[in-house]
Image (cartoon, rainbow, N blue to C red; front, side, top):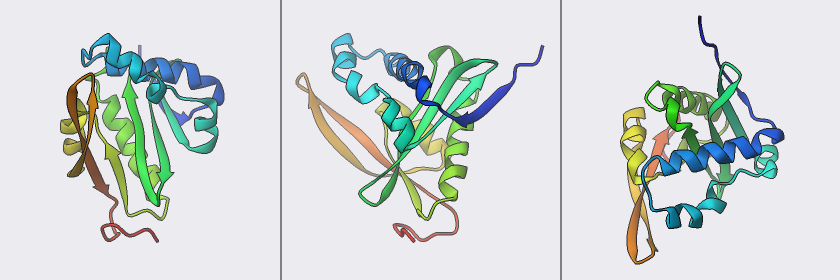
Length: 163
């Protein structure tokens, strides 16, 4: 039996499920439970996010298995979220979502997509063609965290231009 994969815009009614996926995918990296709770707000997708930003879901059959969010902030286009339900990790769905995000971004006037990556996801984004252009540092419970800042250049545009 063939399983159908579809990628399409998320609906406001998907917000709770998308938040569950984001939280489960972050937990996949074995972060302490206290940290996950501190990140809950960042990992929560609100109906407003779906209405205001570009939020796209990937379904396997009828089940939502992943999603991404593109958001404009401070004149840049950010890949704010890209998560895959842990039991679907390793099946190429993250790649499909990233490629779809790039297609979507290619229809905008932005020259690049920027990503503040989880350290565990840096290799994935690098494999997709993003380059590390800096880092963002923060402290959580006495631990300094360095988050890679990455840039994926959209073809045919000069670095840093927003037409």
